[in-house]
Amino acid sequence: METLREASLYRPRNGLLECLVCERRCRIPPGKRGYCRTRANRDGKLYTLVYGDISAMESRPIEIKPFFHFYPGSSAMTFSTWGCNMACPWCQNWHLSRRAAEPARANYVSPGSMVEAAIRGGDRGVCASFQEPALLFEYLLDVFKLAREKGLYSCAVSNGYMTEKALEKLGEAGMDAIKIDIKGDAEVYKKHLGGLDAGVVWRNAEKARDMGLHVEMVNLIVTGVNDSPEQIRGLVVEHLERLGPWVPLHFTRYFPAYRFTASPTQVSVLEKAYTTAREMGVQYPYVGNLPGHRYENTYCHGCGKLLIEREGYRLKRYKVTHEKKCPFCGAEIPLVA
Image (tube, rainbow, N blue to C red):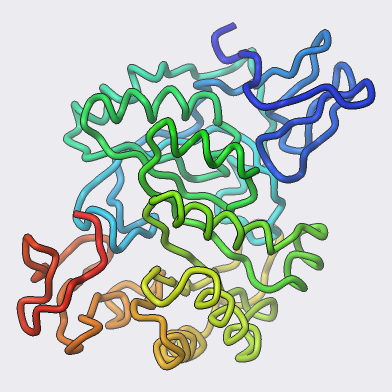
């Protein structure tokens, strides 16, 4: 079975197999699966059940991830599998993340076919997204390596809850950029995500930056969960302390989904989050899921002039020079292009 491969990161532990891909570090008994339901203990070995089992695959604008400072205006062949290592009650892609892997019904796409699809479609790169990409770990190692050989970029849209070793190996394989969702403060992770550690996410974001990866952070502001001024300010403080002023920070609008029915995030809350981040020192904050809003655009940190105007997930205007400088004041703009 093509999608069944021995896992790359695990170790025996007191008669069990400890998965070392994510920080849950599931200890899996014989015949059982881990929390994400994509890894199984079979005859004393840990197997991934989803190598190349692709649940969704399409060319999509890089801005939709969102990446605003990584190859603006480009597109990436975007793909996913099944399952997740988190259970966000407001998950927008729950039909993928809450479904268990079924190897007998797998839709196998080889790494070579994935990269060739990107090339045929005119994409600049490949991107693992829709559900937690770390669950495709072994597949990503092969896809990212092949993509780099073909001159494509590789990126991931992640919840940031992988182990440091997994992150290192993805970087070594060719991952160029990672967008990390930070759900909120420690209380949000404790109350809504089963007691997971928010510190792991910040640790990995910091490590990714130190590895030389392009990093952008996204905070989905959920009504009644993480939308208070105190929570937003605390998140901005953490962002500045961990990542500094130049890593983009996106505040995106929540809409009811899956098991969460609170009303959509108020636009005023998102606007206040933006201005709070800007006043505190984040040079490139953004709002998201508000098509056409002025805070989805990129403004020079030096002179404040409009540099990149966005309309939905497309670029309407792009004024950054080839040297990645502002044409008005000469300030260097921190982006990969």
